[in-house]
Length: 131
Image (cartoon, rainbow, N blue to C red; front, side, top):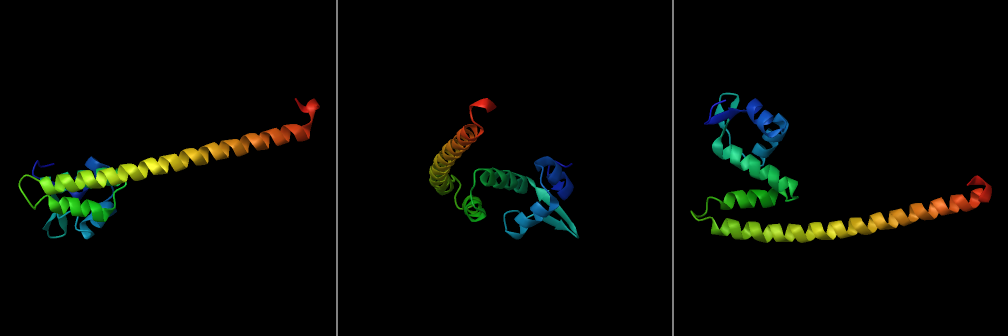
């Protein structure tokens, strides 16, 4: 593996993704590997972008949001616009995750109550001799 470029196989191994995933991200203009005939060679920039794409996906960002943030990187040298937008999107996503967690906690509590109620009903139907 060269420090400058990686093959599709090396990228797949390094990032635990499939070739199909890399081609998908390429089709979505998130990666731009260098072409040598049929070969794709991924640069340092592609590796950094893939790392950010995978992190963004893990956090639940849409590919459109991720692309917007990656594209903003090239706008200015200090990356202030990118950082500001990243923080804004991250706060929105964090709020959404908190709401989802609250909904999940409520569903877990309700399901636990239903299970307890069902177990109590079974115990009553069996009568005192079943204990």
